[in-house]
Image 1 (cartoon, helix red, strand yellow):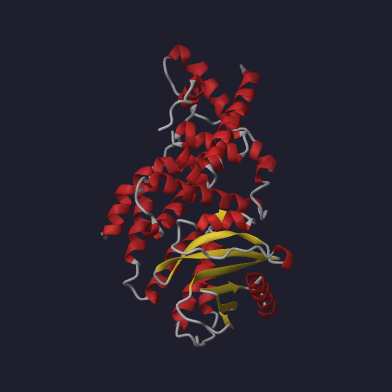
Image 2: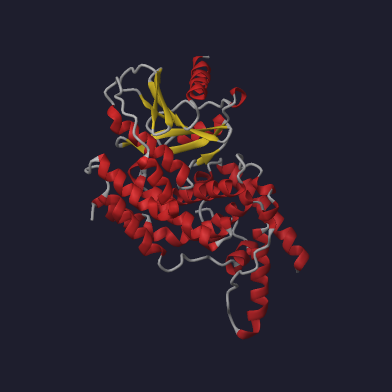
Amino acid sequence: MTDKNRRFETEVLPHLDAAYNLARWLLRDEHAAEDVVQDAYIRAFQYFDSFRGGDARPWLLGIVRNACYTRFQQKTRTPQTANLDDDPEMYVPMVDARGQVQTPETMLDQKQLGAQISAAIAGLPMAFREVLILREIEEMSYDDIASIMQIPTGTVMSRLSRARAMLKEQLGDCR
Amino acid sequence: MQTDDRDEFSTQLKQHLPRYRAPPGLESRIRQMIAEQSRATPSMPWTERLALWWRQWAGVGLGFACGALLSVAVIQFRGAGGEGDAFEKQLLASHVRSLMVAHLTDVVSSDQHTVKPWFTGKLDYSPPVIDLQTQGFPLVGGRLDYLDGRAVASLVYRHGQHTINVFIRPAREQQLQKVTALQGFHLARWTQGDMQFWAISDVGADEMGKFINAFQAYRAE
């Protein structure tokens, strides 16, 4: 095994769940997510020489995110990503969310709430969905999110607060 | 870490949102592919690397495409600048691969001001990025590629149903402009300023000529 190989396995491979989680939320399809993550890893390995050290997670997630967008672009066969969020298919609610199981009494409520939140997030446009996933599930810093999404940190913050507001509004209807 | 905004709502979200875990088997598949990749790295002659590469991607259900490409007679020619055909075949392989494996672009944008900064920090040079929408060749995005042992910028343009990949790297020498045919593709190369350009596509020779003219005219402005 080469040195590059070993470094890649210790620095990049441990972020597999993060990579899959992001792809799974963005693409909302487990098979597509698996494909894209596998492909993104191969690319990450090819470009590993140009990775300048530090935390590999934002670097990897940037590659995964781009792969997801490319995947979308191919699927919808439109040359622009700007209008992907208008694709009606994007608004199909996702209902197979796994809510966290706690005690038997709270189980049903928790599950329902989890499914509601998941469906609400799935209904958000992709740009808002990804910022929420990166912040709320992956707990990444604004700077890291900015580098992944290739936007200024200020935009991350405003997009996040809009995403939260949109989500609250949607959930307000159910509660 | 900025944690000041992790209010009740965030906590609630965190609590209820599933964090999907990679399916079993994915990790070992990735490990295996990486091992194959690393066996194929530069110490090998490019022919073996290409062969290995073909084998890897053939499995993706594109075997027929590989067969077709390999069986097409190679139009032999030699580059005047001493690059040789090995480099040109690398270009071709990168082009074909970009079309095959869902990785045409890393940054998707028709806005040159989005694409150009994207390369910053990923390369040790700043490639010129221009949109040729009005000339009939809209910019689709950019991609990092790996050629001849270094990371290079690739710009992606669309012309009708055709895709044009433009590879850019700092010029090592001045090269005369030249358009050649390679396995049914047209490959153009030129030097401009301190950069070297290679454009490759399945567009016709005439269209390729128009593209180069448009590209160079814009740069000259």
